[in-house]
Amino acid sequence: MSASGVSAAAIAARLSAVGLPTRVEERTRFTTVEAEVPETLSAKSWREVLDVVAEADRFGLLATSLNGRTLWAVVRNTVPTTGDVGGPGYQR
Picture: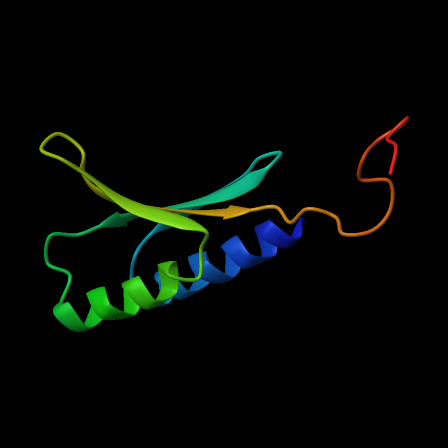
C-alpha cells in the first residue's frame, strides 16, 4: 500500500469510528475516501468529521436530492525527493 493509501486508510478508520460507512479507492496518483453522511449527524460528530478530513489534501461534500450526502477526501501520493525523479536523459 502506498503512503497515500496508508493515510487514506487512517482517515477512513476515523470516519468509521464516527459511524460513517466508508469506501477507499487507491489510484495511481492519489487515494480517495468516500463516506455516506446521514441527515441526522450531530453537530459534535460534524466537528469530528471535519477534523478528520482536514488531514487530506482535498475534501468536499456532494449533496443531491437523489443520492443523499457523500463526503469525499483525496490524499495525493508524495513525489520522490531523491533518485532519478527527472527520468532518463534529465539534465541537471
